[in-house]
Length: 542
Image 1 (cartoon, rainbow, N blue to C red):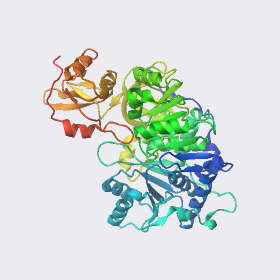
Image 2: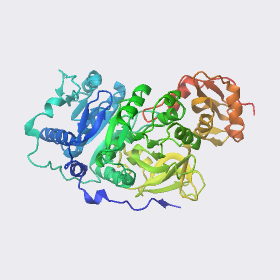
Image 3: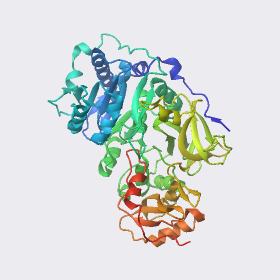
Image 4: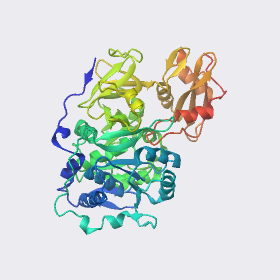
Protein backbone atom coordinates (compact mmCIF):
# COMPACT_ATOMS: atom_id res chain seq x y z
CA UNK A 1 0.00 0.00 0.00
CA UNK A 2 2.94 2.32 -0.64
CA UNK A 3 2.09 4.25 -3.82
CA UNK A 4 4.40 5.80 -6.45
CA UNK A 5 3.59 8.53 -8.95
CA UNK A 6 5.79 7.09 -11.70
CA UNK A 7 9.06 8.16 -13.30
CA UNK A 8 9.61 11.83 -14.21
CA UNK A 9 9.61 12.90 -17.87
CA UNK A 10 12.98 14.67 -17.53
CA UNK A 11 15.38 14.28 -14.61
CA UNK A 12 16.73 17.78 -13.95
CA UNK A 13 18.78 16.80 -10.83
CA UNK A 14 20.83 14.44 -13.02
CA UNK A 15 21.23 16.99 -15.83
CA UNK A 16 22.18 20.17 -13.92
CA UNK A 17 24.84 20.92 -11.31
CA UNK A 18 22.88 23.81 -9.77
CA UNK A 19 19.73 25.89 -10.06
CA UNK A 20 21.84 28.68 -11.43
CA UNK A 21 22.96 26.47 -14.31
CA UNK A 22 19.35 25.38 -14.93
CA UNK A 23 17.92 28.90 -15.15
CA UNK A 24 20.91 30.23 -17.06
CA UNK A 25 20.29 27.51 -19.63
CA UNK A 26 16.58 28.31 -19.78
CA UNK A 27 16.99 32.07 -20.12
CA UNK A 28 20.19 32.39 -22.16
CA UNK A 29 18.56 32.28 -25.58
CA UNK A 30 15.73 34.53 -24.39
CA UNK A 31 14.38 37.23 -26.67
CA UNK A 32 12.73 40.55 -26.04
CA UNK A 33 9.24 39.16 -25.51
CA UNK A 34 7.58 40.22 -22.26
CA UNK A 35 8.00 37.79 -19.39
CA UNK A 36 6.41 39.57 -16.41
CA UNK A 37 3.87 42.42 -16.20
CA UNK A 38 3.13 44.36 -13.02
CA UNK A 39 -0.61 44.96 -13.47
CA UNK A 40 -0.61 47.71 -10.83
CA UNK A 41 1.98 49.94 -12.49
CA UNK A 42 1.93 48.57 -16.04
CA UNK A 43 5.72 48.04 -15.89
CA UNK A 44 7.08 45.13 -17.93
CA UNK A 45 10.17 42.94 -17.81
CA UNK A 46 11.31 41.00 -20.86
CA UNK A 47 13.14 37.68 -20.68
CA UNK A 48 16.29 39.34 -22.00
CA UNK A 49 16.10 42.07 -19.34
CA UNK A 50 15.46 39.46 -16.66
CA UNK A 51 18.63 37.57 -17.62
CA UNK A 52 20.72 40.74 -17.90
CA UNK A 53 19.66 42.08 -14.50
CA UNK A 54 20.04 38.65 -12.91
CA UNK A 55 23.62 38.27 -14.17
CA UNK A 56 24.57 41.78 -13.04
CA UNK A 57 23.08 41.30 -9.57
CA UNK A 58 24.69 37.85 -9.23
CA UNK A 59 28.01 39.46 -10.20
CA UNK A 60 27.48 42.12 -7.52
CA UNK A 61 26.75 39.50 -4.85
CA UNK A 62 29.84 37.55 -5.89
CA UNK A 63 32.03 40.69 -5.62
CA UNK A 64 30.64 41.19 -2.09
CA UNK A 65 31.97 37.73 -1.24
CA UNK A 66 28.53 36.14 -1.10
CA UNK A 67 28.85 32.44 -1.90
CA UNK A 68 27.27 29.01 -1.27
CA UNK A 69 26.67 28.56 2.44
CA UNK A 70 25.82 32.23 2.96
CA UNK A 71 22.31 33.68 3.28
CA UNK A 72 20.57 36.80 1.99
CA UNK A 73 17.00 38.01 2.57
CA UNK A 74 14.23 39.68 0.58
CA UNK A 75 11.38 41.54 2.30
CA UNK A 76 8.94 42.69 -0.36
CA UNK A 77 5.56 42.53 -2.01
CA UNK A 78 5.23 41.19 -5.58
CA UNK A 79 7.19 43.54 -7.86
CA UNK A 80 9.44 43.21 -10.90
CA UNK A 81 12.69 43.21 -8.90
CA UNK A 82 11.52 40.17 -6.89
CA UNK A 83 12.29 37.43 -9.48
CA UNK A 84 15.62 39.12 -10.32
CA UNK A 85 16.74 38.80 -6.68
CA UNK A 86 15.56 35.17 -6.52
CA UNK A 87 17.38 34.14 -9.68
CA UNK A 88 20.53 36.12 -8.71
CA UNK A 89 20.63 34.13 -5.47
CA UNK A 90 20.44 30.91 -7.50
CA UNK A 91 23.16 32.14 -9.89
CA UNK A 92 25.51 33.02 -7.01
CA UNK A 93 24.74 29.85 -5.06
CA UNK A 94 23.59 31.63 -1.90
CA UNK A 95 20.45 30.84 0.12
CA UNK A 96 17.56 33.32 -0.11
CA UNK A 97 15.07 33.98 2.69
CA UNK A 98 11.97 35.71 1.18
CA UNK A 99 9.70 37.31 3.77
CA UNK A 100 6.29 38.93 3.59
CA UNK A 101 6.20 42.72 4.03
CA UNK A 102 3.13 42.17 6.21
CA UNK A 103 5.20 40.35 8.84
CA UNK A 104 5.52 42.11 12.16
CA UNK A 105 8.86 43.28 13.48
CA UNK A 106 8.76 40.29 15.85
CA UNK A 107 8.31 37.81 13.00
CA UNK A 108 11.11 39.32 10.90
CA UNK A 109 13.38 39.36 13.94
CA UNK A 110 12.67 35.67 14.53
CA UNK A 111 13.62 34.80 10.94
CA UNK A 112 16.75 36.98 10.85
CA UNK A 113 17.93 35.53 14.17
CA UNK A 114 18.06 32.11 12.53
CA UNK A 115 19.03 33.06 8.96
CA UNK A 116 21.60 35.82 9.71
CA UNK A 117 21.38 37.42 6.24
CA UNK A 118 24.49 39.19 4.91
CA UNK A 119 22.47 41.24 2.41
CA UNK A 120 18.81 42.31 2.70
CA UNK A 121 16.74 43.52 -0.27
CA UNK A 122 13.88 45.68 1.00
CA UNK A 123 10.72 47.25 -0.38
CA UNK A 124 10.51 50.99 0.52
CA UNK A 125 7.31 50.41 2.53
CA UNK A 126 9.08 48.23 5.11
CA UNK A 127 12.56 49.81 5.20
CA UNK A 128 12.09 51.32 8.68
CA UNK A 129 10.81 48.02 10.08
CA UNK A 130 13.76 46.05 8.66
CA UNK A 131 16.29 48.61 9.89
CA UNK A 132 14.81 48.37 13.40
CA UNK A 133 15.21 44.58 13.34
CA UNK A 134 18.82 44.74 12.16
CA UNK A 135 19.61 47.26 14.90
CA UNK A 136 18.11 45.03 17.60
CA UNK A 137 20.14 42.06 16.37
CA UNK A 138 23.28 44.15 15.82
CA UNK A 139 23.48 42.73 12.29
CA UNK A 140 25.60 44.69 9.81
CA UNK A 141 23.75 43.42 6.78
CA UNK A 142 24.04 45.40 3.54
CA UNK A 143 20.67 47.03 2.80
CA UNK A 144 19.50 47.37 -0.80
CA UNK A 145 16.26 49.24 -1.52
CA UNK A 146 14.09 48.03 -4.40
CA UNK A 147 13.56 51.30 -6.22
CA UNK A 148 12.78 50.65 -9.89
CA UNK A 149 9.35 52.22 -9.37
CA UNK A 150 11.13 55.54 -8.78
CA UNK A 151 11.07 55.48 -4.96
CA UNK A 152 14.78 55.85 -4.29
CA UNK A 153 16.22 55.50 -0.82
CA UNK A 154 18.82 57.53 1.04
CA UNK A 155 19.38 55.06 3.84
CA UNK A 156 20.49 52.14 1.66
CA UNK A 157 22.02 51.23 -1.69
CA UNK A 158 19.55 51.44 -4.56
CA UNK A 159 18.79 48.37 -6.66
CA UNK A 160 18.54 50.41 -9.88
CA UNK A 161 22.08 51.79 -9.44
CA UNK A 162 23.57 48.32 -8.95
CA UNK A 163 22.08 46.69 -12.02
CA UNK A 164 23.27 49.58 -14.21
CA UNK A 165 26.95 49.01 -13.39
CA UNK A 166 28.45 47.89 -16.70
CA UNK A 167 31.44 46.10 -15.19
CA UNK A 168 29.03 43.69 -13.49
CA UNK A 169 27.86 42.46 -16.89
CA UNK A 170 29.85 39.31 -17.71
CA UNK A 171 31.77 39.35 -21.01
CA UNK A 172 30.47 35.87 -21.74
CA UNK A 173 27.69 33.76 -20.30
CA UNK A 174 27.64 33.97 -16.49
CA UNK A 175 28.90 30.70 -14.99
CA UNK A 176 27.17 29.84 -11.71
CA UNK A 177 29.28 27.85 -9.23
CA UNK A 178 28.83 24.08 -9.08
CA UNK A 179 27.35 23.01 -5.74
CA UNK A 180 26.42 19.85 -3.90
CA UNK A 181 22.75 20.04 -4.91
CA UNK A 182 21.60 17.70 -2.11
CA UNK A 183 23.15 19.80 0.66
CA UNK A 184 23.29 23.38 -0.68
CA UNK A 185 20.29 25.44 0.46
CA UNK A 186 18.66 27.62 -2.20
CA UNK A 187 15.62 28.94 -0.31
CA UNK A 188 14.77 29.37 3.36
CA UNK A 189 10.98 29.56 3.57
CA UNK A 190 8.86 30.08 6.66
CA UNK A 191 6.40 27.30 7.33
CA UNK A 192 2.76 28.35 7.36
CA UNK A 193 1.90 27.14 10.84
CA UNK A 194 -0.78 29.10 12.68
CA UNK A 195 0.57 28.63 16.21
CA UNK A 196 3.88 29.74 17.68
CA UNK A 197 6.77 31.17 15.71
CA UNK A 198 7.25 29.79 12.23
CA UNK A 199 10.00 27.34 11.35
CA UNK A 200 12.63 28.06 8.69
CA UNK A 201 12.33 25.35 6.02
CA UNK A 202 15.52 24.65 4.05
CA UNK A 203 14.87 24.01 0.35
CA UNK A 204 17.95 22.73 -1.49
CA UNK A 205 18.95 22.91 -5.15
CA UNK A 206 18.01 19.22 -5.36
CA UNK A 207 14.56 19.90 -3.88
CA UNK A 208 13.78 22.59 -6.45
CA UNK A 209 15.18 20.69 -9.44
CA UNK A 210 13.24 17.58 -8.37
CA UNK A 211 10.05 19.65 -7.97
CA UNK A 212 10.50 21.14 -11.45
CA UNK A 213 10.94 17.64 -12.88
CA UNK A 214 7.97 16.26 -10.98
CA UNK A 215 5.42 18.83 -12.13
CA UNK A 216 6.71 19.78 -15.60
CA UNK A 217 4.01 17.87 -17.51
CA UNK A 218 1.40 20.34 -16.25
CA UNK A 219 3.37 23.36 -17.50
CA UNK A 220 4.87 22.30 -20.82
CA UNK A 221 1.48 22.57 -22.58
CA UNK A 222 1.35 26.35 -22.05
CA UNK A 223 1.96 28.24 -25.30
CA UNK A 224 4.83 30.71 -25.20
CA UNK A 225 3.87 34.24 -26.35
CA UNK A 226 0.19 33.22 -26.31
CA UNK A 227 -0.87 32.08 -22.84
CA UNK A 228 -1.09 34.74 -20.13
CA UNK A 229 -0.95 33.66 -16.49
CA UNK A 230 -2.42 35.80 -13.70
CA UNK A 231 -1.02 35.32 -10.21
CA UNK A 232 -2.05 37.30 -7.16
CA UNK A 233 -0.57 35.14 -4.40
CA UNK A 234 2.42 36.63 -2.52
CA UNK A 235 5.68 35.37 -4.03
CA UNK A 236 7.29 35.08 -0.59
CA UNK A 237 5.13 32.00 0.03
CA UNK A 238 5.95 28.55 -1.28
CA UNK A 239 2.99 27.85 -3.62
CA UNK A 240 3.21 31.24 -5.33
CA UNK A 241 7.00 31.29 -5.57
CA UNK A 242 7.19 27.77 -7.01
CA UNK A 243 4.43 28.61 -9.49
CA UNK A 244 6.40 31.63 -10.68
CA UNK A 245 9.68 29.69 -10.89
CA UNK A 246 8.03 27.01 -13.00
CA UNK A 247 6.48 29.58 -15.33
CA UNK A 248 9.88 31.29 -15.72
CA UNK A 249 11.44 27.91 -16.52
CA UNK A 250 8.98 27.25 -19.34
CA UNK A 251 8.82 30.78 -20.73
CA UNK A 252 5.20 31.74 -20.08
CA UNK A 253 4.02 35.36 -19.71
CA UNK A 254 3.10 36.29 -16.13
CA UNK A 255 0.78 39.09 -14.99
CA UNK A 256 1.15 39.86 -11.29
CA UNK A 257 -0.77 41.77 -8.64
CA UNK A 258 0.62 42.32 -5.11
CA UNK A 259 -2.67 41.39 -3.45
CA UNK A 260 -6.24 40.42 -4.30
CA UNK A 261 -8.51 43.40 -4.90
CA UNK A 262 -11.74 42.53 -6.69
CA UNK A 263 -11.80 45.43 -9.15
CA UNK A 264 -8.11 45.27 -10.08
CA UNK A 265 -8.23 41.49 -10.46
CA UNK A 266 -11.14 41.61 -12.92
CA UNK A 267 -9.51 44.49 -14.81
CA UNK A 268 -6.27 42.50 -15.18
CA UNK A 269 -8.19 39.52 -16.61
CA UNK A 270 -9.91 41.73 -19.17
CA UNK A 271 -6.96 44.01 -20.03
CA UNK A 272 -4.43 41.22 -20.60
CA UNK A 273 -6.77 38.49 -21.91
CA UNK A 274 -5.72 36.14 -19.11
CA UNK A 275 -5.98 32.46 -20.05
CA UNK A 276 -4.84 30.81 -16.79
CA UNK A 277 -5.34 31.85 -13.14
CA UNK A 278 -3.35 30.60 -10.15
CA UNK A 279 -5.28 31.32 -6.95
CA UNK A 280 -5.59 30.57 -3.25
CA UNK A 281 -8.81 28.92 -1.92
CA UNK A 282 -10.54 32.22 -0.96
CA UNK A 283 -10.37 33.36 -4.59
CA UNK A 284 -11.88 30.03 -5.72
CA UNK A 285 -14.80 30.75 -3.39
CA UNK A 286 -15.03 34.27 -4.86
CA UNK A 287 -15.08 32.85 -8.40
CA UNK A 288 -17.99 30.60 -7.43
CA UNK A 289 -20.13 33.17 -5.61
CA UNK A 290 -19.23 36.82 -6.33
CA UNK A 291 -22.21 38.56 -8.01
CA UNK A 292 -19.94 41.10 -9.75
CA UNK A 293 -18.55 38.42 -12.08
CA UNK A 294 -21.87 38.22 -13.92
CA UNK A 295 -21.24 41.75 -15.27
CA UNK A 296 -17.82 41.03 -16.78
CA UNK A 297 -16.33 39.12 -19.68
CA UNK A 298 -14.18 36.24 -18.43
CA UNK A 299 -14.29 34.24 -21.66
CA UNK A 300 -10.51 34.20 -22.08
CA UNK A 301 -9.98 32.05 -18.95
CA UNK A 302 -9.25 28.44 -19.93
CA UNK A 303 -7.76 26.95 -16.74
CA UNK A 304 -7.72 27.68 -13.01
CA UNK A 305 -5.20 26.25 -10.55
CA UNK A 306 -5.73 26.19 -6.80
CA UNK A 307 -4.32 24.47 -3.74
CA UNK A 308 -4.33 24.12 0.07
CA UNK A 309 -7.96 22.93 0.36
CA UNK A 310 -10.22 20.27 -1.21
CA UNK A 311 -12.73 21.45 -3.82
CA UNK A 312 -16.29 20.16 -3.91
CA UNK A 313 -17.96 19.37 -7.22
CA UNK A 314 -20.56 22.05 -6.38
CA UNK A 315 -17.92 24.82 -6.25
CA UNK A 316 -16.29 23.63 -9.48
CA UNK A 317 -19.65 23.47 -11.27
CA UNK A 318 -20.58 26.93 -10.03
CA UNK A 319 -17.31 28.36 -11.41
CA UNK A 320 -17.80 26.59 -14.73
CA UNK A 321 -21.25 28.17 -15.12
CA UNK A 322 -19.78 31.64 -14.61
CA UNK A 323 -16.76 31.19 -16.91
CA UNK A 324 -18.14 29.77 -20.18
CA UNK A 325 -14.84 28.72 -21.78
CA UNK A 326 -13.28 27.22 -18.66
CA UNK A 327 -11.98 23.77 -19.58
CA UNK A 328 -10.51 22.52 -16.32
CA UNK A 329 -9.93 23.35 -12.67
CA UNK A 330 -6.76 21.88 -11.18
CA UNK A 331 -6.33 21.49 -7.45
CA UNK A 332 -3.26 20.43 -5.54
CA UNK A 333 -1.88 19.48 -2.18
CA UNK A 334 1.57 20.18 -0.85
CA UNK A 335 3.49 21.73 2.01
CA UNK A 336 6.39 24.13 2.31
CA UNK A 337 8.34 21.04 3.42
CA UNK A 338 7.65 19.32 0.07
CA UNK A 339 8.79 22.38 -1.94
CA UNK A 340 5.66 22.20 -4.09
CA UNK A 341 2.63 19.98 -4.62
CA UNK A 342 2.84 16.22 -4.13
CA UNK A 343 -0.76 15.56 -5.21
CA UNK A 344 -2.82 17.00 -8.06
CA UNK A 345 -6.49 16.75 -9.03
CA UNK A 346 -8.11 17.39 -12.42
CA UNK A 347 -11.80 18.42 -12.41
CA UNK A 348 -12.37 16.41 -15.61
CA UNK A 349 -11.20 13.16 -14.03
CA UNK A 350 -10.92 13.39 -10.23
CA UNK A 351 -13.67 12.60 -7.74
CA UNK A 352 -15.43 15.34 -5.78
CA UNK A 353 -13.39 16.53 -2.76
CA UNK A 354 -10.40 14.51 -3.96
CA UNK A 355 -6.99 16.17 -3.75
CA UNK A 356 -5.86 13.89 -6.53
CA UNK A 357 -3.07 11.47 -7.27
CA UNK A 358 0.68 11.55 -6.72
CA UNK A 359 2.92 13.64 -8.94
CA UNK A 360 5.67 11.82 -10.80
CA UNK A 361 8.73 10.99 -8.70
CA UNK A 362 6.76 11.06 -5.42
CA UNK A 363 6.08 8.18 -3.01
CA UNK A 364 3.06 8.30 -0.72
CA UNK A 365 1.49 6.25 2.06
CA UNK A 366 -1.04 6.49 4.88
CA UNK A 367 0.08 5.32 8.33
CA UNK A 368 -1.52 4.64 11.69
CA UNK A 369 -0.89 7.66 13.91
CA UNK A 370 0.25 5.61 16.91
CA UNK A 371 1.84 2.45 15.51
CA UNK A 372 3.19 3.81 12.22
CA UNK A 373 1.80 0.80 10.36
CA UNK A 374 0.99 1.35 6.67
CA UNK A 375 -2.79 1.36 6.23
CA UNK A 376 -4.85 -0.15 3.38
CA UNK A 377 -7.05 1.89 0.98
CA UNK A 378 -10.05 3.78 2.41
CA UNK A 379 -8.58 3.81 5.93
CA UNK A 380 -7.84 7.28 7.39
CA UNK A 381 -4.43 7.90 8.90
CA UNK A 382 -1.51 10.31 8.66
CA UNK A 383 -0.35 11.20 5.14
CA UNK A 384 3.36 10.66 4.52
CA UNK A 385 5.44 11.48 1.42
CA UNK A 386 8.95 10.79 0.18
CA UNK A 387 11.00 12.01 -2.79
CA UNK A 388 13.71 14.37 -3.97
CA UNK A 389 11.65 17.45 -3.18
CA UNK A 390 11.28 16.74 0.57
CA UNK A 391 13.10 19.43 2.57
CA UNK A 392 16.55 19.04 4.06
CA UNK A 393 14.97 20.05 7.37
CA UNK A 394 14.37 23.05 9.62
CA UNK A 395 17.24 25.49 9.95
CA UNK A 396 18.59 25.56 13.50
CA UNK A 397 16.03 23.04 14.75
CA UNK A 398 17.24 19.44 14.58
CA UNK A 399 14.57 18.20 17.01
CA UNK A 400 11.69 19.44 14.85
CA UNK A 401 13.44 18.00 11.79
CA UNK A 402 13.63 14.54 13.40
CA UNK A 403 9.97 14.80 14.41
CA UNK A 404 8.90 15.60 10.86
CA UNK A 405 11.21 13.40 8.74
CA UNK A 406 11.91 9.83 9.82
CA UNK A 407 15.11 7.84 9.33
CA UNK A 408 13.86 6.46 6.00
CA UNK A 409 13.23 9.93 4.56
CA UNK A 410 9.42 9.95 4.91
CA UNK A 411 7.88 13.34 5.71
CA UNK A 412 5.06 13.03 8.27
CA UNK A 413 2.64 15.79 7.34
CA UNK A 414 0.34 15.86 10.37
CA UNK A 415 -2.57 15.78 7.92
CA UNK A 416 -5.19 13.06 8.26
CA UNK A 417 -6.53 11.46 5.09
CA UNK A 418 -6.73 8.31 3.00
CA UNK A 419 -6.40 7.05 -0.55
CA UNK A 420 -9.03 4.96 -2.31
CA UNK A 421 -8.65 1.93 -4.58
CA UNK A 422 -8.06 4.25 -7.54
CA UNK A 423 -5.05 5.85 -5.78
CA UNK A 424 -6.85 9.15 -5.28
CA UNK A 425 -6.19 10.91 -1.96
CA UNK A 426 -8.70 12.63 0.30
CA UNK A 427 -8.08 14.96 3.25
CA UNK A 428 -10.02 14.42 6.46
CA UNK A 429 -8.32 17.14 8.51
CA UNK A 430 -5.18 18.04 10.41
CA UNK A 431 -4.23 15.98 13.43
CA UNK A 432 -3.93 19.20 15.47
CA UNK A 433 -7.21 20.60 14.09
CA UNK A 434 -9.45 17.58 14.58
CA UNK A 435 -12.24 18.24 17.06
CA UNK A 436 -12.58 15.51 19.69
CA UNK A 437 -16.21 15.05 20.70
CA UNK A 438 -16.58 12.28 23.34
CA UNK A 439 -13.65 10.45 21.77
CA UNK A 440 -14.95 10.79 18.21
CA UNK A 441 -12.84 12.69 15.68
CA UNK A 442 -14.70 15.50 13.92
CA UNK A 443 -12.87 17.01 10.89
CA UNK A 444 -13.66 20.74 10.53
CA UNK A 445 -13.04 20.60 6.76
CA UNK A 446 -16.01 18.26 6.27
CA UNK A 447 -18.47 20.56 8.06
CA UNK A 448 -17.02 23.62 6.31
CA UNK A 449 -17.55 21.99 2.91
CA UNK A 450 -21.19 21.30 3.77
CA UNK A 451 -21.79 24.88 4.91
CA UNK A 452 -20.15 26.28 1.77
CA UNK A 453 -22.61 24.19 -0.23
CA UNK A 454 -25.54 26.17 1.20
CA UNK A 455 -26.76 28.84 -1.26
CA UNK A 456 -26.89 31.55 1.41
CA UNK A 457 -23.37 31.02 2.78
CA UNK A 458 -20.37 32.99 1.48
CA UNK A 459 -17.65 31.56 3.77
CA UNK A 460 -17.39 29.37 6.86
CA UNK A 461 -15.03 27.96 9.48
CA UNK A 462 -15.55 25.33 12.17
CA UNK A 463 -13.67 25.18 15.48
CA UNK A 464 -13.93 23.16 18.67
CA UNK A 465 -15.25 24.78 21.85
CA UNK A 466 -13.90 23.35 25.15
CA UNK A 467 -16.52 21.34 27.05
CA UNK A 468 -16.04 19.70 30.43
CA UNK A 469 -18.13 16.63 29.57
CA UNK A 470 -17.63 16.09 25.83
CA UNK A 471 -14.12 17.44 25.45
CA UNK A 472 -14.96 19.71 22.51
CA UNK A 473 -18.13 20.84 20.77
CA UNK A 474 -18.14 21.68 17.02
CA UNK A 475 -18.99 25.34 16.45
CA UNK A 476 -19.49 27.12 13.11
CA UNK A 477 -18.60 30.70 12.17
CA UNK A 478 -20.41 31.78 9.02
CA UNK A 479 -20.22 34.74 6.65
CA UNK A 480 -23.62 35.28 4.98
CA UNK A 481 -23.99 36.37 1.38
CA UNK A 482 -24.74 40.07 0.99
CA UNK A 483 -28.36 41.15 1.26
CA UNK A 484 -29.47 37.63 2.15
CA UNK A 485 -31.66 36.72 5.12
CA UNK A 486 -30.83 33.49 6.93
CA UNK A 487 -31.18 32.40 10.57
CA UNK A 488 -28.76 30.33 12.65
CA UNK A 489 -31.40 27.63 13.09
CA UNK A 490 -31.78 27.16 9.34
CA UNK A 491 -28.09 26.40 8.87
CA UNK A 492 -27.81 24.19 11.93
CA UNK A 493 -30.77 22.08 10.79
CA UNK A 494 -29.19 21.98 7.31
CA UNK A 495 -26.04 20.42 8.83
CA UNK A 496 -27.92 18.17 11.27
CA UNK A 497 -29.64 16.41 8.38
CA UNK A 498 -26.37 15.47 6.70
CA UNK A 499 -23.92 14.38 9.40
CA UNK A 500 -23.51 11.64 11.97
CA UNK A 501 -24.21 12.13 15.67
CA UNK A 502 -20.74 13.39 16.80
CA UNK A 503 -20.52 15.98 14.01
CA UNK A 504 -23.58 18.06 14.84
CA UNK A 505 -23.00 21.73 15.69
CA UNK A 506 -23.48 21.44 19.44
CA UNK A 507 -21.14 24.37 19.97
CA UNK A 508 -23.51 26.63 18.05
CA UNK A 509 -23.34 28.83 14.98
CA UNK A 510 -22.44 32.52 14.83
CA UNK A 511 -22.56 34.98 11.94
CA UNK A 512 -19.32 36.97 11.45
CA UNK A 513 -18.10 39.58 8.96
CA UNK A 514 -15.11 37.55 7.74
CA UNK A 515 -13.06 34.41 8.33
CA UNK A 516 -9.41 35.29 9.10
CA UNK A 517 -6.96 33.48 6.83
CA UNK A 518 -3.22 33.58 6.34
CA UNK A 519 -1.52 34.45 3.04
CA UNK A 520 -1.84 30.84 1.86
CA UNK A 521 -5.61 30.94 2.34
CA UNK A 522 -5.59 28.68 5.39
CA UNK A 523 -8.09 29.41 8.16
CA UNK A 524 -6.43 30.87 11.26
CA UNK A 525 -8.25 28.65 13.75
CA UNK A 526 -6.24 29.66 16.80
CA UNK A 527 -7.29 33.27 16.27
CA UNK A 528 -10.93 32.18 16.03
CA UNK A 529 -10.63 30.04 19.16
CA UNK A 530 -9.22 32.96 21.13
CA UNK A 531 -12.03 35.24 19.99
CA UNK A 532 -15.00 32.88 20.19
CA UNK A 533 -13.81 30.21 22.63
CA UNK A 534 -16.56 30.97 25.14
CA UNK A 535 -19.41 31.59 22.69
CA UNK A 536 -22.89 30.59 23.85
CA UNK A 537 -25.64 30.68 21.24
CA UNK A 538 -28.17 28.64 19.30
CA UNK A 539 -26.85 25.11 18.83
CA UNK A 540 -27.91 21.68 17.68
CA UNK A 541 -30.26 19.99 20.16
CA UNK A 542 -29.90 16.54 18.60
